[in-house]
Length: 114
Image (tube, rainbow, N blue to C red; front, side, top):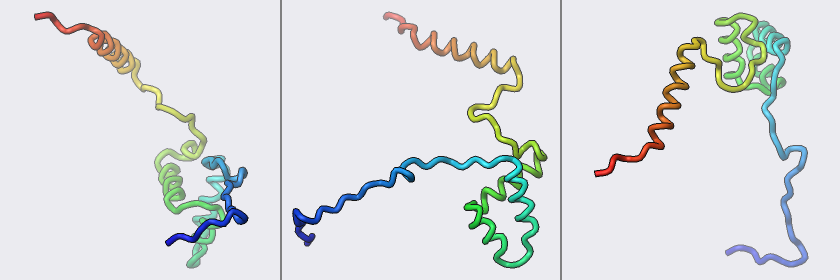
């Protein structure tokens, strides 16, 4: 059975405005390189874990940066523009827009009368 609430002691939980909105952190390419180099220099047990805790990173983020660096080189660590990737072939873009126009016009057509 729950405790009765007394009118004198009202408890109200209020969010701290500093922590009200959380944003993703963005790392500069130099910072990524520095963390990767420091991670590579970790040789003793627990050093890598301490680095990840200090930098507040997950090991998966470090693995992603390593993969990007290995596959695409230094340019992979640079910030990228958010959103969809641009189409590589102009023909593909033209055919997609034609199909979209065709689909929207066929959706507005009425069914044949019987």
